[in-house]
Structure formats: C-alpha cells, structure tokens
Length: 233
Image (cartoon, rainbow, N blue to C red; front, top):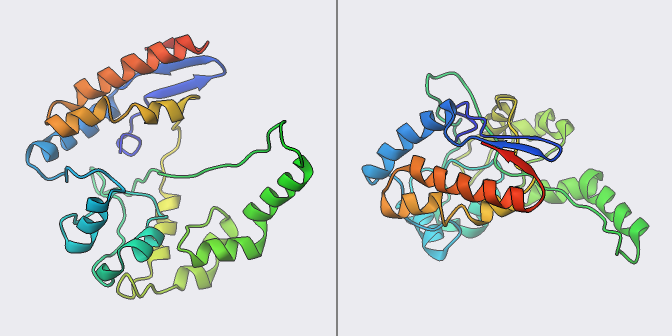
C-alpha cells in the first residue's frame, strides 16, 4: 500500500542502501490507515491463521488487499464462501487506477547441488513449460507469463467461486496499472521477519503507524550496516 501511495522507502545500488520510511508516499498511506485502525475497521486477526480463514468464510473479514494469487487459496481453504467474494481493483486516492504487487518468487541452483544440470532443467520446466503452467493455472495461480495474460480464453474465464465474474480481466488490468520505480531491500526477507515486532505492534496496540515504521527503519539500518551494507537514512 506504501508502493501504491507513491512511497519509495527503499533504494539499493550494490551495497549502498537508503531507507526512508517517512517519505511523502508512506505518510500518505499511514494517514489513511491509522484512521482505519483507530475506528476498528482493520481486523485484528493474524493472517493465515485458522481464525483468519474462518473470518474469510463467515463475513468477519469483508475485504482483502492482496495479491492476484489469492483466488486459489480462497477456493481451496474457504469453500463455504463460494459466491460471496468478488475481485476489484485496488482502491486509489483519486480514482486513477494505480496498483502495486504482492508476491513473486524465484528458484536457484546452489553450488552444493549434486545434480546441477538436472536441477536447472527442472526449474526451466517449472517456469516455462506449458504443462507446468497449466498445472499452476488449474490450482488458481496467477501467471507470470505475458502469453497467458494475453490469452482470450484466460481472460474470458468465468469463476464459479466468484459468482461467475471474469476475475482474470480485473487482475490482468491491475498488472498493467502497477506503478514503476519500486525497490525492495537486498535483505527483504529479514525485513519481513521483524515487521510484526515493529510495525505490527502499531496494529496490535492501536498506536501510530509512523512510530512503528520508525522502529522498523532503525532495526533495518542497524542490520544492514552489520551485514556489510552502507545504509543511509
């Protein structure tokens, strides 16, 4: 949501890193989200927990701002909510379509691999072979290939779970509306691992998100410098 609001808190150029979790776009987001938290409009339920899935099924949780891959988990884990959900563009501040991304992944072959050629061949199949892509799509995955995003059959798919909605038309358009210029940290996995202990406490205690982000930034700067990066803020 910081991404969509125009925030660009992370910059990385080799080992040079800049972190500013108080830039204009970030504060634009916190100004709105702080109010939602104060008014009890953000569900205080840990994501991916049993209570979270129950909330998705019984209406306790009414909306999600989440990646285009979520239809698969909804259909698989919240079957009783079939027909209740719809897909919509990410709400924007002035009505202009602007999206961000939440997801993605990658695979690599390590030097320790006993069969690097075989492993590399499997990864090539996994990410590019039509058979593999079909398996991914059938499981509700959102494709990372432009060929699928432009496929009329894919776009015209009417999801029974989503009340017959052509969800891929909405999701594909959102992928075209993603704003550019965003960067993640070179150590984003670590950053994500401490989010709950910093920004997450603002959610739990209904305190300022700006304060939570400041605590997150302090730890990210210290960690980056300890790991050999040169981190400015």
